[in-house]
Length: 375
Image (cartoon, rainbow, N blue to C red; front, side, top):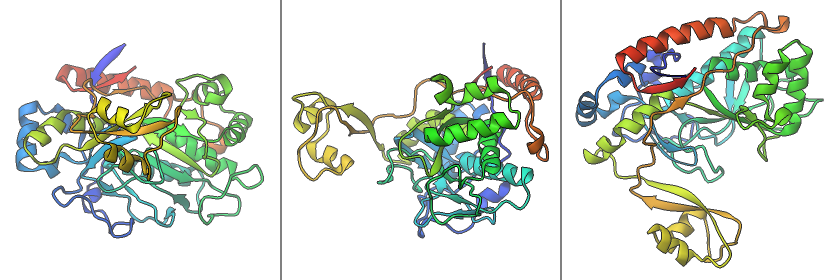
C-alpha cells in the first residue's frame, strides 16, 4: 500500500548551518549557496513558493542531491564536522547533504550509547563539495555515500586495514550496522561476504531474530531487496548509501527551476554504456550526441582504445538527471526484539515505528506532501 507522505525522521540541528571548518583540504562549497539543513517542511511548499525561493534565496532550500550516486550534483553541501567520536582518513573528501551528516552522527552516537568508551571510528570519503566524480570511486557523487571504517579489538586503526575474525570488534561493528539498519533510511551497505558471515554469525549468537537477519543479509538468501550486499573491494570498510528523502525529492522538483532561473548551469551527467563488439568511441559519441574527447575525459582514457564488455561513462550535457517520479523510500526493516548485550541503548521497535510512521504518513497524505514511503 502507498501513502503520500512527508518523512520527518531527521532531527536537523541548527548547528549544521554553521558547520566547522572543512576537513577536505580547504575546499569550500559552491559560494553562491549557503550550507543550510533541508527542513522537511519545504516539501509542503507548492511550485510557486519553491520558485520564489529559487529566485530570491536558493540557500534557503538546504542541501539538494540531483542525480544518481554515480552521476550527480550536490547543492548547499555540508562538511562533516570534526568530532571526538570519529577520525578522518587522510585526504578524505567529507562533504555531504545535511541529511547524510545527520545520519552519520546518529549511527555513531548509537554505538557509543550501546558501548560507552568506544574508540573513534575512521571515516573515509563521502563526496566533493559540489558532488560529481571522485577519481577513486565510481559512486560517491550524490552526497549520500559514506565510507565507514571497521571497529577493531586494538582500538582505532590507522587507515582501513582488512577486517578478520581475529581483528574485528564484532560487538561494536554489529552495533554500527544495526544502527544503520534501524535508525536511518539506508539504501544499501556494500560489504565483503567474509565480513558479512562474521557479522551474521555474531548477531545470531547474541539472539537477533534469524528471519530478520535473513532479510537484511543478501549472502544468506540472495534476495535482491537485502540491504547488506557484496561488492568487491570492501574487506576494509563499509560503503553505506543513505536515502535522502528531502534532498532527493526537493532536488527533483527544483532542478528545472534552478536551470531556468540561471542559478546553475545545466550539469553534465553521465550514463553507463557496456561496449559491444565492433563499437568505437566515434560510434558512442554519435549515438549519445557527445564528443570522443568528452568520453575520454570522463573515463580517464589516454587513447581511443575501448574494450568490448567493459562499461564506460558517457557524458550527457544538459540532461535532467533527477527522476521524474517522486522518491519511494522503503519502510525500515526493524527487528522484533533487542539482544541483552545491546540493551544499554534505546533502539527503535517495529511495533512503535509502524504506529508512528502510519500516523505521520496519513497526516502528510492529507496535506498533499510529495515523498512516497512504502508501508
